[in-house]
Image 1 (cartoon, protein in one colour):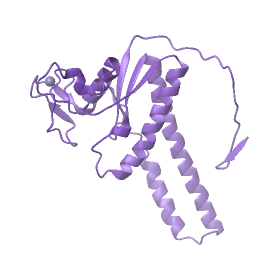
Image 2 (cartoon, protein in one colour):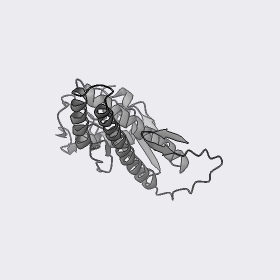
Image 3 (tube, protein in one colour):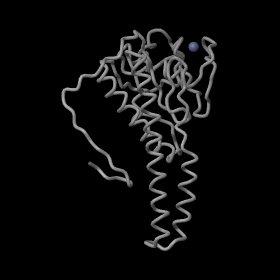
Image 4 (cartoon, helix red, strand yellow):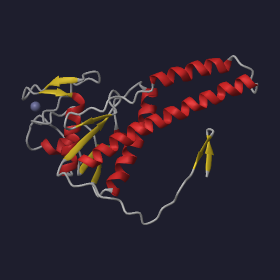
Length: 227
Ligand SMILES: [Zn+2]
């Protein structure tokens, strides 16, 4: 039994547990992990942001209150307990969001391809956002991996280099794409791209073909793409 944050937890260790396999769907999905939406899927679905702003505001208020109280006093201890509860609530809320989305994905797709965000470039000065996103991305990948293993689905981590820049239809590489460009029109084939969904489609292609990165898929098909 574990006691944490005024809560008791009972932990069971189980061996040889039989898991009911999820039925095969024959469907594959590419996933781009992001800041605006935690997950962008190659079928166009966007998971939305993991919302915690209300709780973040409460944390700010309680921290301010705490700073005006005498450390170790009864009032300080009461505020500290409240603050710990808010942190705990936030952690559980994020975990719940991630559990629901990863279960949905593993249930509905047989091949799950995720960008390896260790190579994510261009997040620049969003250091705080990056730190938070890193934690979410790590947990999303972790859950997708072990749930895929449980339900005999295939999970792949791939190199996401150039996946935002390359048109998933014709392979044109848009080197002028800026970080703030959330949509763009391919100058070669004219298709309108949602930046992150295009990236997710390329991630799926990299996973399916097993190439080093998306440029290799189109290297023979388009002269403007240089490896
Ligand atoms: Zn194109």
